Image 1 (cartoon, rainbow, N blue to C red):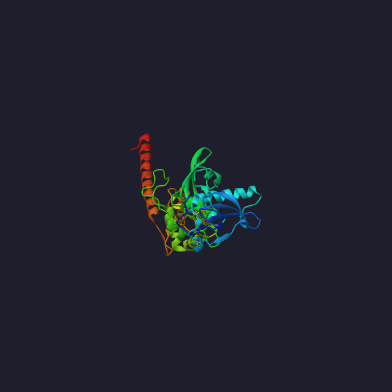
Image 2 (cartoon, rainbow, N blue to C red):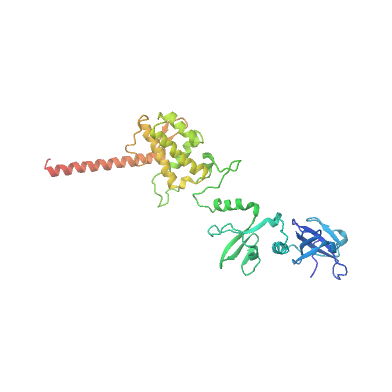
Length: 367
C-alpha cells in the first residue's frame, strides 16, 4: 500500500487523528477517523483509511489531533500513511461502527452532518415509497447499485430505485416528489404561510394554474370555455378573496343575503375556495371544480334577470356571467358559448313545435 500524495485531513464531521506506531518500517504516523465514542476516556470505534473498523484506545498511542480539511503538521509530512477519502466506504464503516458499538452495549449518538443522510425508496409508485432502506442492504453488491446520490436496490426480490436524502430534508423531499415537475397535472406545488399553514391566494393560484387545452381532451365532460378560469379571474379582479367576492356580488346585484340563491352562492364559493386555496389543486383541470364554477355563474345569470326572484328558466345549459371591476355583469366567453347553445336549442324547440302542429292538422284533416 502506498501513501496518498495529499496531506490534508478529510472534509467530514468526524474527529480525525494521527497515531504513532513505533517500529513501523513504512510510516510512523497513521491516519484514523473516530466514529463512535465507547464511554471510557479515549476508547472509540474508529476506522483506518483502508476502511477497516476497529476498537481503538487512544491511551495506548501518541496522538496528533487533526482539524477538518486542514494540512497535516509539517513534522509528519514525509512519515505518514493515509489514503484518499471514499464516501461509499465511509458510509459503510459508519454503519458498521454503530452496529459494533451497539453490540458492545453502547448506544451510538444520533447521526449528524453527512452521516445524517439515508437511502430512501424513491419510486412514488412503490408501496414503501419514502421508507428508509436498511443500510446493511446498501452495502451488499448483489442487492445494491448506485452512482452518486441515486441507486438501485433489490427489495423483496424486485429491483426499485432509491435516493440519498438528508434526514432533515425527508419531508420536503416527499413534497417535491408529489408536487414537482412530474406531478399530476391536477396538483399544484404546496405553498405555505409563515406559520407553515397550507394556503395560497387566488392571485398565487392563477400564477400556477394551467388552462385547459383548446380543444380540451376528448373525455372532458364540458363543452365551451373554462368557467373556472373566468370565475377565478373575476375573484382576483374584485378582491382576491372568495368571501369578499361573495359580499361584493350580494351588494352589487341586489340579491338579498338571506335568499336561498345567495346562501347557495356562498356555499359553492366555499367549496371552490377550499379546492383552490387549501387543497391547492389545479382547479382549471378538475371537472368537479368546473361544475361548481358553472353553478355559481348560473346563479349570477339568474340574479341578473330578476334580483328579487332569480329566474333559472332556460339556464340548464350552464349559463354564466362574471363581474368586472366596475360591478357590471358582463358576458364572457363561456356565457357567449351558452347563448349560442340557447339559440340553437330555441331553434330546435321551435322546429319541433311546428312539426307537432303540422302533424296534429294532418290527423284532424284540417288544412
